[in-house]
Amino acid sequence: GKSPMKITSDFKTQDLVAEAAAWRLASLLLERPRPEWKNEILQLCSEVTDGKLSSCARRADQETEEIYHRLFGPGGSVSPREVSYCGFEDPGRLMAELASFYQAFSFQPRREEPIDHISVEAGFAGYLFLKEAYAQMRQDSESVEITKKARERFTDEHIGRCARGMIHRLGDIPPYLGDVLSWLADPPQPL
Image (cartoon, rainbow, N blue to C red):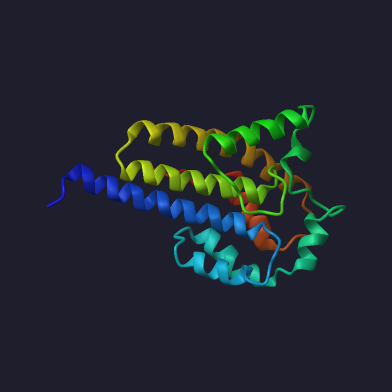
C-alpha cells in the first residue's frame, strides 16, 4: 500500500485545496455580483468545509449590484482597497509591493478591480494555497516552505490590514459581508 508519509502528504494536500476553495469563496463574496456570481458561490460552497464562510455564502443571495456599489463603489461608504488603510505609507510603494508579490508567483487575476482590492488579495491567498498544495503533491518541500511563508506574510500584512480597516468603517452592511471581513481579518490557521 501507500507509505505513511505519502498518506499524510495526501491529507495535507486535500486540506490545502479546501483552504484554497475557502479563500476563493471569500474573494468571490467581496466581488461585484455578476449574473453568474451566485452559481459560482453555490458551486464553491460544496467544496468549502469552513462553517462560518458557508453560512456567509448562503446569505449572499441578499446581495445586489446596487448594494455593492453603495458600499464599495466610488464614493461608497467603505473603501475595499488596501491603499485606503496604509496610513502614511506611500501608496505607490504598496502597489509596487503587491505587483511584485503577484509577479513572483505568476498570479494574473481575472478582474475588473485594482490589485489592492480586498477580493483580489483574497483570491491571491487562495491561489497560494493551491500552489502550496501542488508543491506538496510533488513533495517539493522547498517550494512548500517558500509559498507558505509568502502566504502567511501576505495575509497578515495586506489582507488583515485591509479587512480590519474596512471593519472599522462599516456602518450599515449586510451581516454576511461583515462576517466575511471578520473571517479575513482573523482567518482560521491551517494545521
